[in-house]
Image 1 (tube, rainbow, N blue to C red):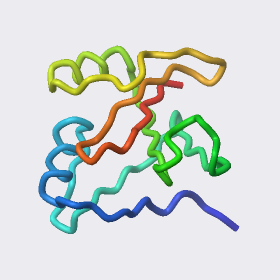
Image 2 (tube, rainbow, N blue to C red; image 1 turned 30 degrees about the horizontal axis):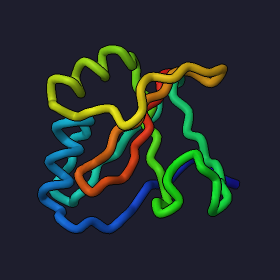
Image 3 (cartoon, rainbow, N blue to C red; image 1 turned 120 degrees about the vertical axis):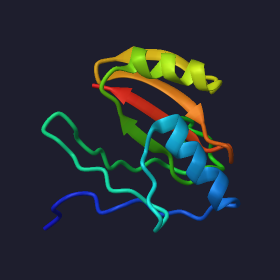
Image 4 (cartoon, rainbow, N blue to C red; image 1 turned 45 degrees about the horizontal axis):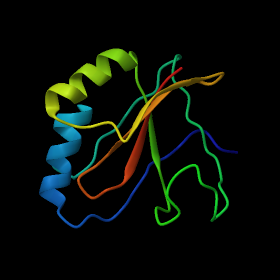
Length: 115
């Protein structure tokens, strides 16, 4: 029944500032309609997962956490350093890949993942 993930939508306190940050820091080309379309390729997959309200994986006051799959996590870390974006969590490796966390200007944790 489900073909794929259709989108992620959320409200923001400062639309212009958040669009600029996501454009510059994560290189997402945000269009005039205030969004972008990320087309998957064969190397990308979308994970849809539930967490209990008290699961400590990400802050309980944050209802949703974005996870973006990146091509090269080390290259991404270098870019973030150049942009002055600190890591909220240092690189971690597991059976699922390598992960880091950063925060957007409104304090939402974002996970960046290299499979």
